[in-house]
Length: 44
Image 1: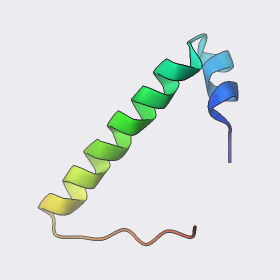
Image 2: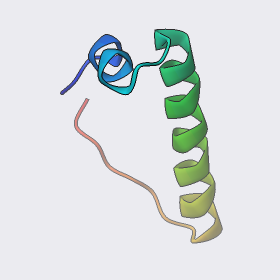
Image 3: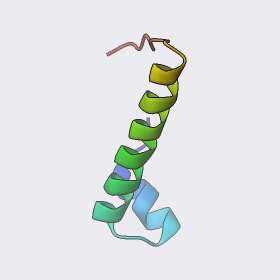
């Protein structure tokens, strides 16, 4: 697991922008899975 702060530092971006990009990516994946009528099981 890697922190948003570390990702932001490596990419030279603001942590807030990294958070937004991750949320957009999660939404995209969720949409793709919904279209395929699939669920994702994750360890929480």
